[in-house]
Length: 177
Image 1 (cartoon, rainbow, N blue to C red):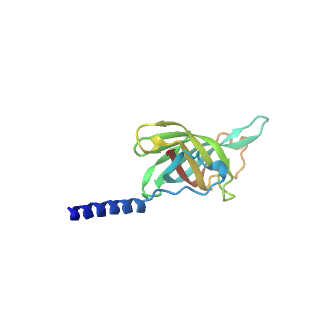
Image 2 (image 1 turned 135 degrees about the vertical axis):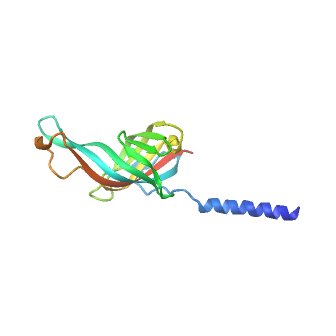
Image 3 (image 1 turned 90 degrees about the vertical axis):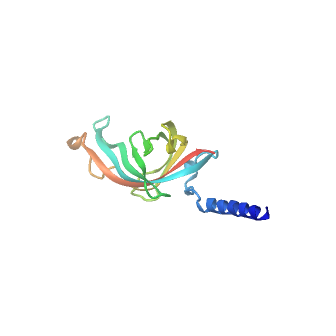
């Protein structure tokens, strides 16, 4: 009887040690406006690599400007090191399991790099399917690289033309505690 108790305790301790070594992602250091609500916890970190797609559009008064149309990026799990899914117009994040989350920008802050798109806090407007992203309540976009509107002029000469600008970012997904 004593031997089985020691064996059971050993298994329990090994299990607890295993859980602590498999810690999940850690929240990033962000400006206060980009922090998710305190009742949410981080559950997923993904690295995005792709393009920000812009279109040269006329503005009232005869001027033109590059307007963001959509991101097009592949998502990679930072903890597993494998493909997680994709990020596209909406903005939408879609996991390989078919689950999706549609976001809406709540707050923005300047990027740490001067030539990068801003950091964001987004809220989940809607989720779809059954899978990893269905539980999402908030998303942070941080550690951005590139992605700003093209430096080339936008004018009547290239109106309605598209430009793809490479970017990278890290997305953090939060769920209810």
